[in-house]
Amino acid sequence: MSKQLKLHNAMWPGLVGKGTDEGQEPPISLERMLDLTVAAEVNGRKFEGVDYFLFLPHTDPDASEDELRGIADLIQSKGLNVGTLVAPVWPGTVGDSAMGDAEATDKFLTAVKKACHIASVFNEHGVRSYGSIRIDSAEFGVDQWRENPGANTAKIAATFKEAAKIAADHGERLAAEGEICWAGMHSWKDMLDLLEEVGMPETLGFQADLAHTYLYLMGYNAPEHALLKDGYSEEEFWAAYKTMTDKLRPWTIDFHVAQNDGEVHGAGDHDKTGKHCPADDPNGKLDIVECSKYWLQDAESRGIEHICWDGCMFPNAMLESPETWNTILASMIAVQEAHG
Image (cartoon, rainbow, N blue to C red; front, side, top):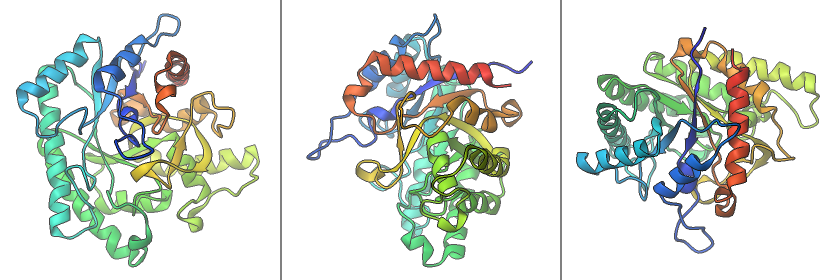
């Protein structure tokens, strides 16, 4: 019998799309996000861990080992584990475009090195014993990529190969998040081409997010790769879903439970991408449990030990509501129970 997948909450909804600019809501602290996570309970069941973005204000990527152990102590004191870590690969954090010049790709690789170092501290501490390190191309938008798709995908793949070597040296795996705003990863087919060009499945795989991969079906940012058209039938949906998951599931090493209402809208640096919705959003396009089963077939054989909720760009009032987290946890439990 396969091991039961651990249930994790993401910490980055307290950060992504938040800030101090006009019109932005303030970030929510790590400790507050942990407390909101711990407070959720459904029929005696609770979240078992968190996935974690390695950047300010939650974490300084250059924090000392003592500071990192303090963070690990804090998380463990709440009764939680750490799973997947998000490397700060984007311009404005540590990194820069994986498709850029030597200076940019050096920054990208530095971000991966810092993430691997933090992972090793957490692993030695004992708060972390599974999960991967998430990356993407950090090249926002697809216009520049389209100028020379073949060469640009090759450039991203070359950077990813170097990143994968760094990860392998630390005993880590990289999970490339499929999201339509990132060049070279903006459709199911382009994502598959990139994974195959890297060709290091033991070290670099795919992170499937239900919300983002729904937009893969619709061909946003890559109409030529659309598997569905507006007005599709239920039969057409599941046929398309099987086509997509059959291609990407063998590469999938990390998984996000999420909901999507079909809108292409985000906030701040994450504009023009899939909108995560509450688990019970009446406009949600996905049967969360059924869609998850397609991705989680044979999950154990690919080293998946946990699943994580992703609710980027939720308003702070929604994040502060206990009902939000109980509804999410209930959905996560349903996925966990249906898997296998």
